[in-house]
Length: 195
Image (cartoon, rainbow, N blue to C red):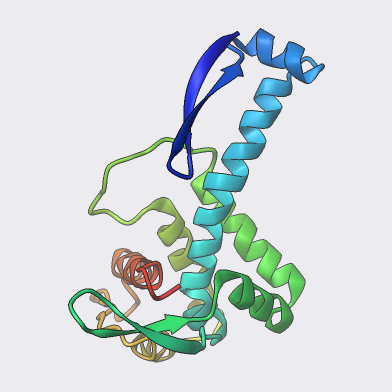
């Protein structure tokens, strides 16, 4: 065991913590406790937030459901920014509006694309795999006649964003362009004051 300094509300305390996985398991009274705890923490703090943000970002385009503006706030530059309903309220609205199996499948697809990636990575100009997964789901809906480019473009425009989705030479929606557009939606929905 060792002492580890931990900051809390402006103060620092020294807490006795295990130095090894074996010590953690012993303190927990169960073999494998350290790994189980690490997995649960990673899922709760990293994977599920990423997946839900992807679902929230796609909600307008995927199901026509938007976050309601609940107020405004002023930033340091004096600009008024919209404040949208909380993740908790928006998640409840999605669960009430979208059939559970469909929402479950969409969330599962996002989790599958994210995988167990809990590393901190730098910014990439290429859209993340989760946006390609969302693009593929939308392209399947286009192919099935459930939606079209105009509907997708209108959904993004209704969010106050100007993103042009390109088409291929044959007139089909360009997958890369659609994934980039979904990433822009995600980034703007995740801005402070907007979520």
